Length: 97
Ligand SMILES: C[C@H](O)[C@H](O)[C@H]1CNC2=NC(N)=NC(=O)C2=N1
Image (cartoon, rainbow, N blue to C red; front, side, top):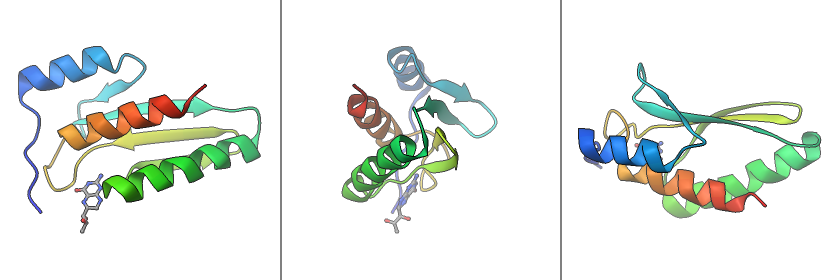
C-alpha cells in the first residue's frame, strides 16, 4: 500500500524528538544501536520489537551481534521515512527501562 513520506518539516521535527536516533541520509532512514547485558537480553528485546512490528505491520531492518542490536527504520512503501517509522521508533524506545 502507498504511504506518504514525511515532509521536510515533519522529518526535521521527528529527528529532533527522536534524539537517540541517528539520521541515515542515504537511506532516508533512522538508526539506533541498542546494547544489552548479554545475548539473552538482546534477543528478548528483539522478540518484543518483533511483536510491535507485527502489530503495526511495519518492520525494522536490523542486525544482532551478541549483546548488540542495530535497528534501521524506513518505509519501503514510501521510499523513505514516514510516520510509521516515527511511531515504531517511539514504541521501541518505550520498551527500554
Ligand atoms: C505487504 C505488507 O503490508 C507491506 O510489505 C508492509 C510490511 N512491513 C513494512 N515495513 C517497512 N519498514 N516498510 C514497509 O513499507 C512495509 N510494508
